[in-house]
Image 1: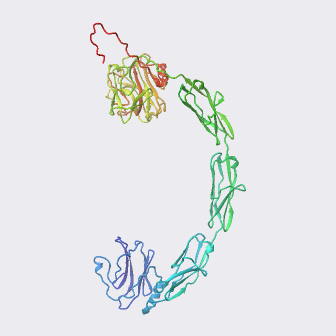
Image 2: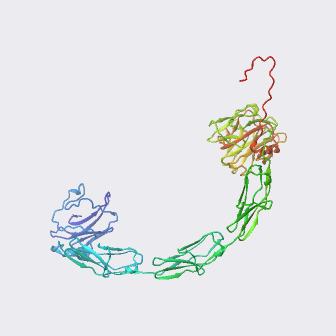
Image 3: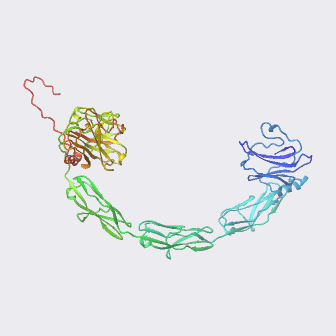
Length: 628
């Protein structure tokens, strides 16, 4: 506060804030007589009084916190800089600071006291008595009193004539007010010079009986599923709930919501709730629970299986209907003890387990027998002699050797990678590694009677272009090969052959349906071309998935490297295969469908290794033999 041009100014500034709020008086106070001045701030509003009368007020929203921890300076500005050199010239008297906002009546009483001023030793005087309060039960009520007098002063609040325990300050706060606390409240204020009792302040506590503002709605649910009802109620707390089915209480249902788990038809009917408190009771309207029941229905039938003796397989069914559903599996119309779930798992299968399997699905509302699934049990697989025309066979038995010819493969990018394969070990292609076989006359199959690429793959994923095996000259020409290509659908297998007879060169692509190949499972893939008939075919697990007649066609395999798991050039250049490759083989003719199927049926026994060459007797005249 300061005087500028004979008029009072009051400035408020928050710590660290350069902007401030200022109140400017209009009356002159530099007329040579004493004036009583007061500034009162309550909330964000400040008021300036002169000689017990209102002068000016205004909102000070920019100042939300006043720092009063520093020095209080009288007669000089506390600001650093130019303002810090300004001093008050005149007389100051009775400067006082209060820890609460004074009312206009308080300010006027001090002004009206004139030269008598504030009493140095005075009995308590109530300047602002407590006022009556009306609250709803459960809310908070507050009474306050403001009194002058010589400190220290003591306070004791009363309800009617009874002291309120612990109520010994200038404010009385009553939390969670209940009707029993209604009545007249007063406070006795004491100091060393006297005692004063305030006028009564009436506490009125309003109470409300329950009212339902949101009723429960009807509910339709299938048997075996959950159902719920809920209401919204108002009224004086605490509210007590009890749900009813028809006229009978539902045990434990004492909340505003009712949840019924795994509902059964016997629970259908009308539900309501009674809401009560100390001041009344109200019943909700009825909400109807309808429980729908359904006999079993089969949405996915068990499928026939063909397995080798000693292996495992399973049959499964997917059924709908009201819960609970029960299952019983049958073999040739005879029930299988203990097999009472939706999936039938068979291990170490023997020939006597071959036959017709079915499952009976039952619930409380009916039963349904599935269609038949045939289990065919084959003798344990044995290796087969490699079909004629085998020119390359990369068995991947922890090496990259060609078991038939001289065209060994070699890992590129990452030195090695092997895993458990379909037949023994397999190549594991990951981290970008692949295999390359140099160009050789042994692998130039184009001029011959045809060609076949066949082997086992286990892709980690069926998305993205993934070259499996192909000839590629590194100049953009792909001779023949196999590739997964999700551009045309997940699990699509492509076989392609390039014709060197045509000008310009033409490439024929065979493409399987989507999801022909799946991930994380060993599958046999093959591409065949028979030059005499012109027929090219592609197989997955011994089943033809694409076929076409190329007519006169000369595959481009001349002097080109052969790659496993990599596209060296052309479209999709740089793409790799991720997963396992096993038993990859090349033939100089197109294998028949029966030959492809025989390889598949050999399963994990694969193709038999050819016997080692027969030994010959030593030639006559030998005089030394270091056999090692």
